Image (cartoon, rainbow, N blue to C red; front, side, top):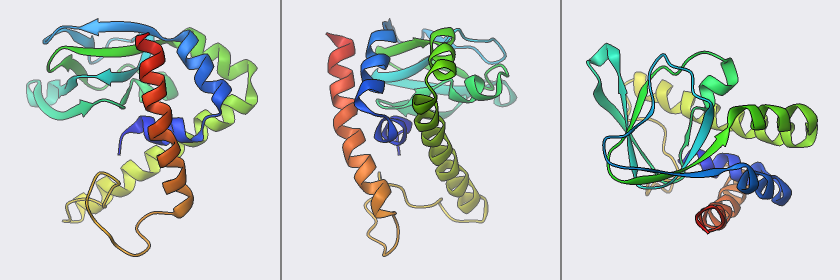
Length: 180
């Protein structure tokens, strides 16, 4: 599932207004480096359109993942204040919304309600990703996600499903506002 769906689903409308106001639209040509492994970034990003390739030095910069519209980039470095653990390169022409790290940090410090919603959303996303990786490490293909066509009883908490539906609508709105 795209990170934006977790995060935007938990944010309030005024939080989205703030994100739109803070975001700077940035175009990337295929091959442009957005984030470099080991080098601090001054922004976190939301991929609006296109695709980004995630690469790591430990694998000679071979692609380990591809990110699509709706992904957040740089949230882990934002949370733990460590440099990025991967390089992110435009796999094709792409557009991101760059949210300046300092502005986001300031907003989180002065708006505790926003901070609670933002950090909860990141926590839910990270829990989902950990469960997925744990299932994959145990020999499975990973836990089913909302991107999969799996209809298993008890698969998704109905509260999370409502949040994701709202988030998908909010992401489309966010894309349009940042692009406009």
